[in-house]
Image (tube, rainbow, N blue to C red; front, side, top):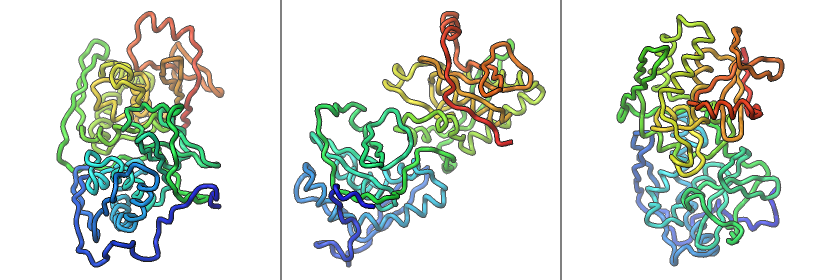
Length: 395
C-alpha cells in the first residue's frame, strides 16, 4: 500500500531526463573503500541546479534531474557489497564515499545529502528528506531501536535520521518545523538494519601493532594485537543501539587472529572460572577509563574492536569487549547487567564465585571489567540491577 497522503516523487523514469544527453562520454570516479580504490563509471555527471537548494521545490527538481544518472552506480555498489559481504551500515559507508566523490560535502552539503538519498533509494532502501531552517535531514526506514538519533514516524513506518551528527547532534525540533520532501513509501520497504554481523577485510596496508599491558597475580602480562586504525573511521557516527547489537559486533579477522589464539594460550591451563577472571583483568587493567561525556562529548557505545583501538573507554565498552572474549573462548551463558549509570556482565560457570545474580533459574557470577573505587563498589551493592540482555549459547 502506498500512503496516499504523502506526495510521491517519480524516481524511476521511463525515458531520459529532459536536458540530459544520453550520448555523453563515460566518466570515472575513484572511490577509496576499506583501503582499496574502486573506479566507478557512469555516463554523464551531476546536473547542477539553476539555483541553490534552499527550498522543497529546488531539492525535488534536483532529485528529478539527477536520479537516472545516480542510478547507474547501483550495480557497482551492489557488486562491492556482495563481494565484501557488507552489512547495511558498511553499505552506507560506501554510499557516503561515492557521494563525496560525486559532489563533495564541503562544496555543497545539500547536494551531497541529496545524492546519498538517491543512492540509498536506488539500492532498495526507503529514505526520506526533511527540510527546515536551512537544514536538510536524511532519514531511512529502520525497525531497529536507536537511542541518540531523531526518529520520525509515518503511518506504521519508523525512520531514523542518518546525518544528525552533521548538525553536532543538536537541533531544536520544538522550534524548527521540518517539511518532508516528496518521496515514495511502499508497504514492505527494505528496512535498514544497524546490526553488524561481520567486519569486512581491509587491504594489508595501514596495519600496526598495539600492545596491551596489565598485571595478573603480580606478574606483568603483554599481549600484542594487529590492528587497523582506519577502521575507527567507519564507526565514527555509528549510533547508540541495543546491547544485544553492540555486544555481538564481531572482531575483524585480523584482530581475531592476533588476539584470540594468544588469549587461548594464556588461559589453557586455567580453570574456566580463573580463565574468565583472566579475561576480566585483561580488559579492566589493560585500558584507560573515561566517561563518554568527557572523552567524546556525548553518549557513544563502542564495538569490542573499537574499545581495543580507542585510547579510552567506559563501562559499556569494556563490558562489550569482555562479553565477546568470553563468548569466543568459552561460549558460556551471560547476562548484561544494567545499573543507573553503570554496566557489567554476569557469567554462568559450573564453579561459582561469591557474588551471584539469579536469572531464569541460572546463577550468574558478576564480573566487573571496569576499575571500581571502594565508594563505587558500595554504591553498586545497594543498587538494583536489571538484565538488559541475555545470551544463551545454542549448544
